[in-house]
Image (cartoon, rainbow, N blue to C red):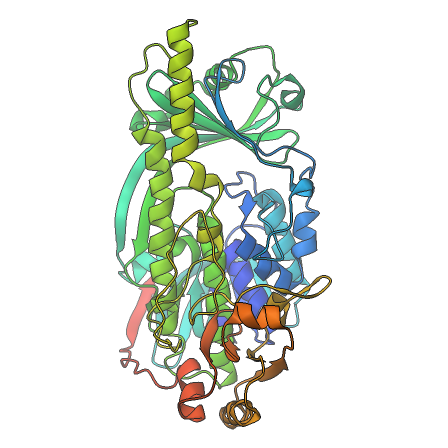
Amino acid sequence: MRKIETPILILGAGPVGLGIALDLAMRGTDCIIVEQAESKPVLHPRAGGVAARTMEFCRRWGIADEVKACGFPRDRHMDVVFCTTLAGYTLSRHPTAPLGAREELPFTPEQRERCPQIWFDPILANAVAKRADHVTSLYRHRLLSFEQTADHVVAEVRNEDTGEVFQIQARYFVACDGNDSGVRDALGVGVEGEAVLSYSVNAIIKSPALNAMNPQGEGARYLFIDETGTWANMTVIDGRDLWRLTLIGQESKMDLANLDMAAAVRKAWGRDDIPFEILTVAPWRRKELNASRYQIGRVFLAGDAAHTMSPTGGAGMNTGMGDSADLGWKLAAAVQGWGGEGLLASYEVERRPVGIRNARWSSGNFKKWKSNKASWPKLLEDSPEGQLCRDEVGQQFLSSLHDEWVSWGIQLGYRYEGSPVVIPDGTPPNEDTPGEYEQTSRPGSRAPHAWLSKGRSTIDLFGSGFVLLDFGADAADTDALARAARKRGVPLEVIVIDNQAIASLYERKLVLVRPDGHVAWRGDKVAMDALELVDTVRGARNAVPAYAPQPRVPLRA
């Protein structure tokens, strides 16, 4: 049987798998992506919002401008509308400015962007294709089985077009194969959380006339509420013709044979004179699940394979992109030889709490939809009592769901508490508030943004290796850290910043930032042995349990 070798094998060419491949390629590390589907546009897009932190990753990978220019209208108002139907009563409205009219944010050089997967996935795939010197993409290939030893993973793969079965031997294997991950199941890794929050059906609808004929006006999302609560919502996809209508209900909602989706569309719109075409219909279960392990030996779970969450808040794909940024530099460090044995073990320690946090927040948003559910017999009544009911219900939804639409804390405020490759300084953490974000250089946190010059942020300093920011420290301290890094082969750049405002923002004279842009250590001086400090942040000081080899594990057909 033919065998090919690669440092990293990635299963799945969705956003997370492509993100890991881009991050590895940027660091000069080779990998192979195996994807059973064809390379083609996404027919049933789920994610539409690209969070500010993900945009910072895209900025690092050189594709941020492409995401912004994806084709979504930048003059479209992005309001969230609570209504009975499009032609019915407006209960309340959360106004949101068009993408092209937003004010600059003080804590990030980027904004949350609207780029549905019909465009986002191809942008990532095209960027990966341009890095063919480091990334080999095998579409229409299926993983049949895999086994791992203490030294490598061997995967058996079939070319779906030719039928050839061959082996790929890799030092590490990353499974990005979705919420029904066959790799996760084959490894016997369990999941924790709620398997069913609700049953839903999505329909992708094409209606070029809807924008002009929508009495509720332009918006990004419309929640449809009747006397018993929220029964459906509709989200804009491309800002022009494509929409996603989601029906929420019991398991019976998934019985497509008895579902009249066209009637549901007309009910939501409140009128039957707007032409439309239903392109796809797909039932699904809303879940809150996290894998009990994110790593088994040399196999890692990332994206939906590691965590599945309600789309309320748009954290799912973006949490997975955070996995990409965390795992990419650590895999590259391991392959290049300067990462310690404990560096990869820190992936689960850092990312699993974030997956649990974000999934819980997402479920909380959805449960607020349902907790608002009550008996409102007068909601549709054309009377003063009906109007009073509508005002109360509208304000209830508007206030309880504010953090779903304004989520800077979720997008930027996660931090790696208790990580073995982060050196704490004893300071208390900021409050973890979903709707608010306060920049800090506290170890484990995302390094703060500040403008160095027009168009150039401190965020742009981070990515290729470690960066030691010097805000007027003793030269002996910076020299000691630089020498220690050189001795261990750790890529480190010392950057002096002579700017009092940025120095105040970063709070210490020395701040060591990791390749993923998170702070590893800070201090006004190096109060510990410099080699010990460097060994800690590169994962050479935390013990890792020995891994017992496992036999070949076949995946389900």
